[in-house]
Image 1: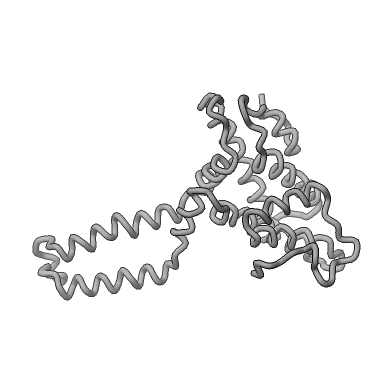
Image 2 (image 1 turned 180 degrees about the vertical axis):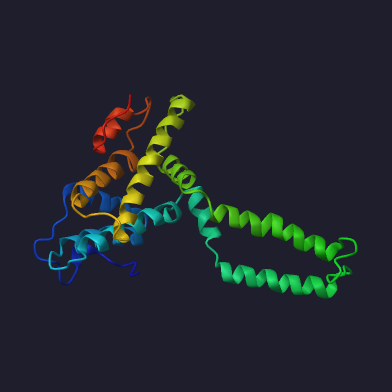
Length: 240
């Protein structure tokens, strides 16, 4: 993607396509942190405006799904961002690397790899240690559960103040993670045409509120947010 992309100077802007105040605020936040994320957000909104495109809702949903999938690994200044960036190595190249190492082990080790007899010597030991400490550890981090990844990302980008009780902070972060995954599942279902597009506009507005009020919020200071208020903003029914 073009890192110099700037919607404000787009050569042929779509007639009548104007971002709302909330959308502009989200766009500016994304632009300050990662231009590729900004392009996904803007592209999703723009294609949705193209009423001559019968696939506009599904293509828009694809942009927002990719935005959500990319944010936890593309956001700057977060420990998880570097960790996951390091983990996004190519599996094919990693397996090929293992095979090369294995060939060298079989060539240099005293172990009989046909009968599988002999002691674990330094060559085989180094290989097994690499498997456990490097390859398997990388594989595990690369396959971090979605809810855990969402929770880590949300808690890193918008942490609660230290004065908020840990149990309450955890409860609310679990709630935020659940909401995050709900939106991700919704966009994903549309991408695969597994859901109708009738409520897309309503859901998108709710998602924008979620980004501004929850993900990008800087208002959580001495007290934790009230879950009913959050659910109300997201269009939910509240919590007892």
